[in-house]
Length: 328
View (tube, rainbow, N blue to C red):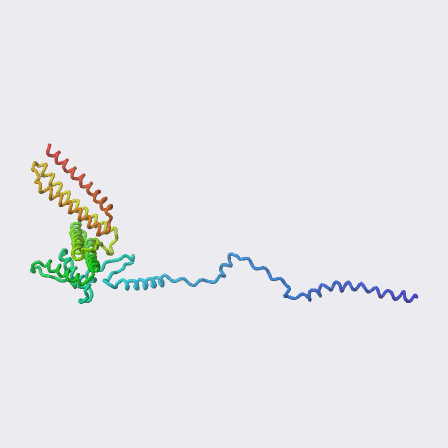
C-alpha cells in the first residue's frame, strides 16, 4: 500500500495540457485558407482618379479643320456654278455673275442665245459700260431703228422658251448688269459721277421690267435687285448720295420759281406743271433704286423726309434773306 501512494505524483504531469491548449491557436491559423480572406474595400474615387480615364482622340488642328472646310466650300461652289454660273461668297449670299460670265455657253443653246439678245437690247441704256463684252450683238449707229431690230431678236428667241424661263432670264441679265454698275458707282469718289451711274441703274431696272412685261405679260418677275459683294452699309451710302442729288435738284428748281415770283415776273403755268412732273419722276426713281438696293419703303421715306426738311429750311432762309435785302 505505501508503494501505491508514491506512484501517484507522476500523474500530476497532466497540467501540460495547458501548453497544448495554448498551442491550439497556431493550429487554427494553419487551417484557414487564403480564399477565406475578405476582399479589401474598393478605393473611393478621388479628384486624381479623373486622370486615369481613357484619353480622348486628339483634337483636329486649326490648319486641318480649315483645309476640311475649304474642301467642303469648293465642292459646294462647284455645284452652284452649274446653270447660268451663280456663285456663292464666304457669307453664303448669292452673287449675280458678271455679264461676260453669264453670256458664256454654246452658241446653239436657246437659253444662251436669249440671254445674249436681252443683254444686247438693254445695253442701249448703258452706252460705253459694257463695250467689248463677248456675246453682245453690236448694231452700228448708222443703222436706222436699231432698237427695233434688237427687240425683234429678243422676241424671236423668247418664243423658243417657256414664259417663266424667259422672264427669269431677263431678270438674270438685269442683275448682272446692275451689279457691275453699282460696284462701279461705289468706286467713284465724285458724288456727281456716282449719281450719273446710279441714274443708269434706275433706267436699266425700269426698262428690264418693261421688257419682261412685253415678252412675258402673264409672268410677274419683279424688280431686279443688286446681288454683289458690297456691304449693306456701302449700298445704303450710295442711296444716300442719290437722295442728296435729287433733293439738290428740287431745291434749285424751287428757288428759281420763287425767285421769279419775288422779282414780279409771274411764272408761267407750264413751269409749274414741269416742276410737278419732275418731282413725280424723281420720286419714282428713288423708289426704284430703293427696291434695287432692298431698302424698305419706310426707311427710304424717312431718309427722304429728313433731307427734304433740311432743304426746305434752307429755302426759307434764302427767301427771308432775299426779302430783307429787298426791303433795305
